[in-house]
Length: 238
Image (tube, rainbow, N blue to C red; front, side, top):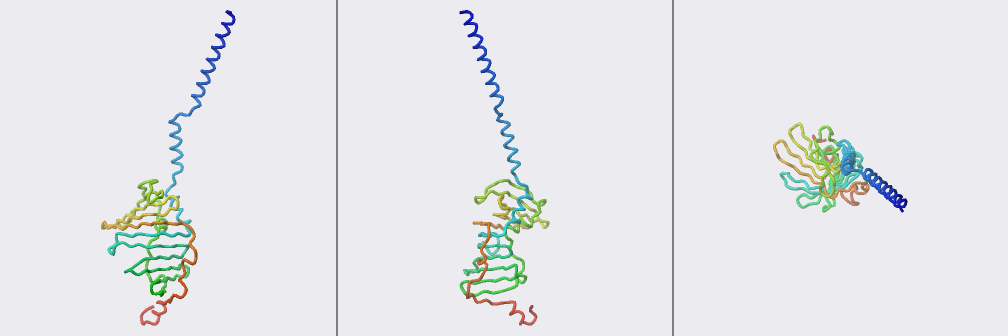
C-alpha cells in the first residue's frame, strides 16, 4: 500500500508539472496585443500611397464622363455634363433657357457648337475660342508633387475615398482639392483668388472608362455653318 501510495504521488507530481509546462508554453506562444497593434499600424502605413503615386493615376485615364456644378461666378451657378475620351470632348449646358452642346475634336482642332432646339451648329477652329475650361484630369496632371500640401488623408467625400490637397499659386491664389485615391482626379475643387473671392467646382456621377465614338458626332441632318470660311470673305478678318 505504501508503495502504491508512493507511485500515486509521483504520477500526480509529474502530471501537474507537465500541465504547468504546457500552460506556460501556450501563454508564451500567444502574441501580445501591443505587438498586433504595431504590426497593423505598420501595414496601414505601407498601404498609404505617396502624392506622386496618386497623381500618376490620372495620366492613365483615357475616357470619362461626369456632371459639374460651378458656383462663385458673377453670373451665378452653372451646371452641365461632360464626356471625354482621348483628344475629344463633349459638353452640354444651358444658357438663357437654351440647350447648348459643344463638341471639341482635338485631332482636327475643330469645335462644333450645336443648338438642338434649332437643329443647327457652328463650326470653328479650336484656337479661335481661347483657353478651354479646366477638366478634372487637368488639375492633377498639371500639379507638381513638390508643390502639393496634404491637408487630410483618407476622408470620404460624396461616397468616395479622397485625400485633401492644397496648392499655393505664385500670385497668392490657393487651390484646394478633394482627390479620389483610386483614380487620382478631384471630385471637388475650391479656388481662392488673391482678393479672397472663391470659386467652387464639384464633379458628380463620375464614370471612368471608354466613351463611345458616336458620342462626339453631330446628329444626321444638322445644318452646319463654318464661321472660319465666312471670316475669310470679310476684309481684315482671318
